[in-house]
Amino acid sequence: MLGKIVLSEIQLTERRRFGSTDIYLSPLGLGTVKLGRNQGVKYPQQFSIPDNRAASALISAAKNFGINFIDTAPAYGTSEERLGELLQGQRNDWVICTKVGEEFDNGESRFDFSAAHTRFSIERSLRRLRTDYLDIVLIHSDGNDLDLLARGESLAMLEQLKREGLLRAFGMSTKTVDGGIAAANASDGVMATYNSEYIAEKPVLDYCAAHHKGVLIKKAFASGHINDPATSLRFVLDHPGVSSVIVGTINPDHLRANVAAAFRTDSASAN
Ligand SMILES: NC(=O)c1ccc[n+]([C@@H]2O[C@H](COP(=O)([O-])OP(=O)(O)OC[C@H]3O[C@@H](n4cnc5c(N)ncnc54)[C@H](OP(=O)(O)O)[C@@H]3O)[C@@H](O)[C@H]2O)c1
Image (cartoon, rainbow, N blue to C red):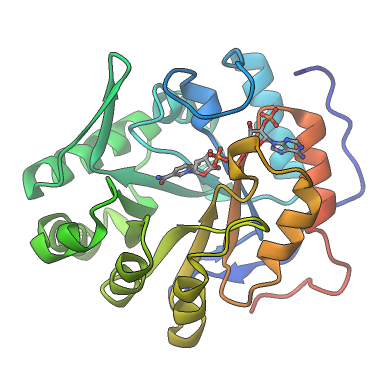
């Protein structure tokens, strides 16, 4: 349902530092797979991609709720291009995270972690998002986290692009514990999966907390399969390593419920 959004008094004023960077994130971020792609996804229900009016209302509501963090990727269909249009005039209000390495064309994913593709992808993301810098860029792992790190090409190129001022921070969206820890070691932070029913990657979060690396959480609701979203969100946010939880929703009522679950009266400070 994408109807009327009722703004409320609830606002997430808490900001959490992304590792040792100068980037400060709302504890809840907005995931945007569903703004750009409805093929090859693992959500429990089919859905229609929201039109511009609904997507714009969702983004405004998120901003009014104190959310300052939005996550996209070239592999999320039209997500980057749409955000370029939808976020026009509000670049300074948002921390934008995108990714490199995964492409999604004609219903299929393919991967390219070469240095040349990494630069090409970043330059394309800048054009699509209509900006001259990206805040956080993650290598979109295909699951072979350690191999990608050992190959090192994409990571080295991201380091270079950070020196050139095209991005502020970089890391990897990982799928394994060893890979998550190694990626954290080699970068500003990681994106890992963690929720009340899946804690296998907790050692990555623990490592990052101990070593001042950033942690973004994906699939905090197991892509919509979790029974109690509010409990899972609070469980994830209680881990001291977590910088922000990216929840993908296109339902304004769910957005509001998630903000309410993430809201704490005593947490209006950055850690
Ligand atoms: N490899 C990667 O780097 C990677 C992989 C996956 C995801 N991500 C990022 O992480 C984000 C989140 O991951 P995800 O979308 O897979 O999973 P998720 O956030 O765990 O779950 C999203 C699903 O939960 C539903 N939902 C949200 N709030 C709800 C609520 N309060 N009550 C009931 N259902 C609710 C959403 O449906 P409604 O739209 O109906 O609310 C949606 O279908 C993505 O959007 C993306 O930005 C990254």
